[in-house]
Image (tube, rainbow, N blue to C red; front, side, top):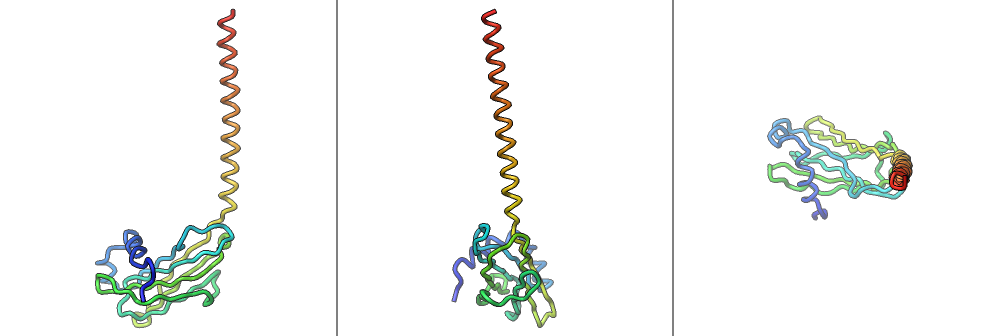
Length: 163
């Protein structure tokens, strides 16, 4: 069973990861967390946990939200072979992001006695809205100043012609 888009997401994430040579030498799973689609405020979204550099294909993947373990809405994909003789695995969780909420994907490789954690923090859209409002107000004020300046210069130029 293949997850849709697994290969394309894995390829898109590759440039952000350390070189494969370093990963093979250390043998520690590399974990990334990202939203499947850009999140909208108050709307449910899916977070994806991508685990790469897995060998042997045996590890535990878990999610926490604000420090509490979560199992509801979690799906775990199969081990997918990679070209460098390691495996990758996806886990997904359905969330309704709250501003500042910390989501973590925790990966434990029991044979290596190693745990890797990746975090995703929901953006605070209230600050974005305040910034948008402030920038719109500044643009309006600048537009009014420039319109008054233009009208003043037009009147000044007209007065010079009639004088």
